[in-house]
Image 1 (cartoon, rainbow, N blue to C red):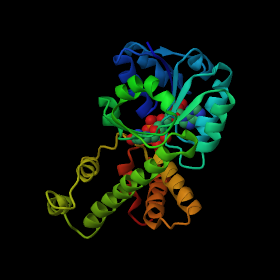
Image 2 (cartoon, rainbow, N blue to C red):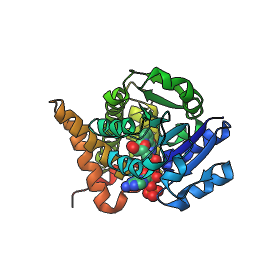
Image 3 (cartoon, helix red, strand yellow):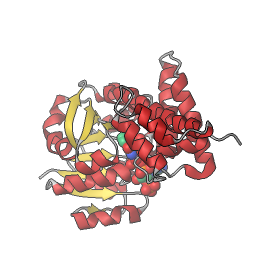
Length: 288
Ligand SMILES: NC(=O)c1ccc[n+]([C@@H]2O[C@H](COP(=O)([O-])OP(=O)(O)OC[C@H]3O[C@@H](n4cnc5c(N)ncnc54)[C@H](OP(=O)(O)O)[C@@H]3O)[C@@H](O)[C@H]2O)c1
């Protein structure tokens, strides 16, 4: 049985750990805030006190933390427990620049680094239907097959060199669409309201037409139903829009729409909505 260490049991990591345990894998989890990991004991996971304890003896290590700095810090703590031949699936969204230092840390310890961010939010994570965007050595694929199979419905293998970050590059392109769309939906509802239009009429115009989408319906329902329980927080949306802007700048590209989405997430966070779902970018609208 593959022994899996999962570091970071936030919205995504907790759901992924549950599916790994449900698939019969031997799962040890660690989270900075231990209380957030403890409920996973009821699902059959073991909760470790420190990253180093979680990774010791694991065949596969998964990181699912906020950003590259957090992943690097946690994996440095874990390093004394790493061993030659382990596979590290880095599944957080870390942008492009952070991938190489993480891969270098893995190489220092003889660990195979697989760049493997995921597409899909809380519900697909709970249902085990994420899309894994993976790049790394073909030698790592057999050991990762049951792991990715438990958390996702499909894995796209994008390259053989994890350090090159092909998964993270595709992830940024895909998430830029979702983040921009979320900001636009909130702005559209806010604009309707500010112009004295019933948001239900705005929804009626879009629904069923070529501009409709599952995303439109989900975020519209969150806004009009005043339900901002987080699938993806405003704070994390701020982080990822910043990562996209940094990657675009390195590539010599303007990303004006992502910059505007970042400004809206930032304003919503400053208005106290940082830990709510990113649909709360809606609150960034009113001037003042
Ligand atoms: N939610 C989504 O829809 C979604 C979808 C695809 C990818 N992602 C990506 O997946 C990653 C996790 O997202 P999430 O939604 O699960 O976020 P989350 O609920 O905010 O969880 C973040 C996790 O990172 C930990 N963490 C943050 N900073 C840390 C630090 N400095 N040291 C140690 N641990 C730290 C948190 O620990 P504490 O509990 O102690 O705060 C928590 O376990 C992010 O990279 C995100 O962009 C998210």
